[in-house]
Image (cartoon, rainbow, N blue to C red; front, side):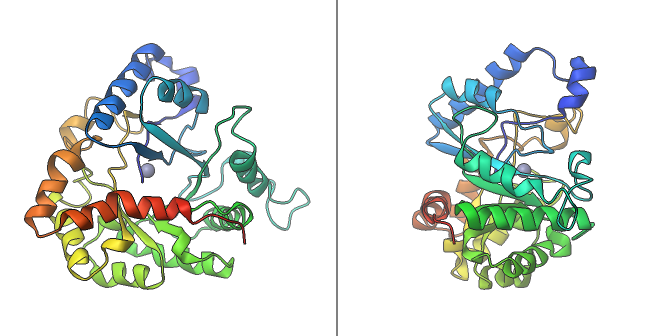
Amino acid sequence: MHEHVFVLSPEIHNNFPEVWGDEANREADAVARLTELKSRGVDSIVDLTVIGLGRYIPRIARIAAQTDINIVVATGVYTYNDVPMYFHFSGPGTPLGEPMVEMFVGDIEQGIAGTDVKAAILKCATDEPGVTPGVERVLRAVAQAHRQTGVPISTHTHAATRRGLEQQQIFTQEGVDLSRVVIGHSGDTTDLDYLEELVGNGSYIGMDRFGVDVFLSFEERVDTVARMCERGHADRMVLSHDAACLMDWLPEDLVPVMMPNWHYLHIHNDVIPALKERGVTDEQLTTMLVDNPRKIFENQGAY
Ligand SMILES: [Zn+2]
């Protein structure tokens, strides 16, 4: 429910092409990784790469055509602070109005950038700086596009500062049904009170950074999911890695050293066996990995 094929900085690549390197090699690497994931029983991934993360759909479409895995793509804007300069002079209350809502709705209803690939989920972010004016603008635009189209919302949060609750507040003000929202990166904390508050407000929570062990250890991530299952919340959790074939924000050779488990196969190789050892049942695993994602996407319709 929260992966990436690539997280990239296209303007850097345009001017420093050595960062990206050979296009054919990059695409072949992605095809190989996704094909391996499919061979482990994963039929679909959700690629939450939006504006700000280097979304480029023609490349994703080429890769998807070479694997049997389904890649569900997203629309939205990813920022922790300001909106991108493209949006600086527009927005609610300006003569130009808010262009984001129409852009998101077009991606969902018409297709992205002249392709027939439609976004099936909306994405926004709140990090440590909190609900800055730029972040609030994106959250509200995402909420409005959600109500116009009915596709679900998935978020990035900074769990240590309980940012998910602020997102829920803004979504509620915009009339969003919180059961149609996944509060992402919730697995970065062991704070069960916070997690139960998010779930109590009706949202799904993303235990979605397995492998990002620099934020929280493998053992703590597994333990938190197991304890939430014990408390009866398997029906509100989804599992993921937030991994990518390349994320150019970090030195490429350093990532496998810093975070050796941060790849698409970690859940199947390590997390599922560890959860089972902690008493999580096969039924609960199916709920988190199959049934919940299906319910999130089945719950359609504008309102
Ligand atoms: Zn992500």
